[in-house]
Length: 237
Image (cartoon, rainbow, N blue to C red):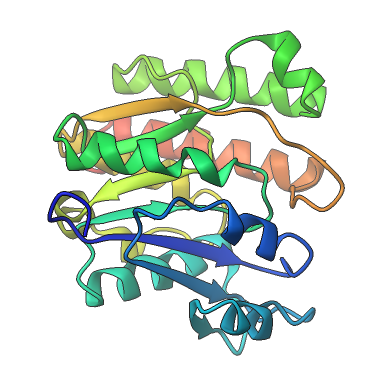
């Protein structure tokens, strides 16, 4: 245990066999356990994860990104996690930084920690982020900050950490099974007055990294705006 806290990394995985070993190799040694939830992959992700010594849960049917996270957090809490850090196994987020996510929570600074990929337009685009995603990210983050009263650098990072108290206080099982799960999660955390911090993370877009297409991005954007409006009118309180 790190400072007498049980820290668990959760990896929501779908067809991540090409990048999984690299991801696991770079996860810091402060974690007591690494849990991978395989969302009905077809490329041997689950078998590889087992060979790497991870605790593996397999979905027999694809449940979506949000549905995968629900299983991740449920299993982590059942295993006694006091801090849970979500790391994408496609290496779009540098796993080596997970140490700082966990430490911010263990040391009592924050209840929720987010990765912030947006430090400058030049860096984001040079890191491979498509221009339309950068634009959507900036506009949606501005909207979400305005309606929530926050001043977060980015709302849409997939690298996140939560304290046990945060996860056990918020009804995330009723969140969407799709990508908008993350936006719902943050609005609920804010409505419960949890402290949210950020860690700067580099932008890593490359061929093997997963990414939703333009059509799914539009759907995600519309869902995020709807979440913000619901928060504004007290739906998450």
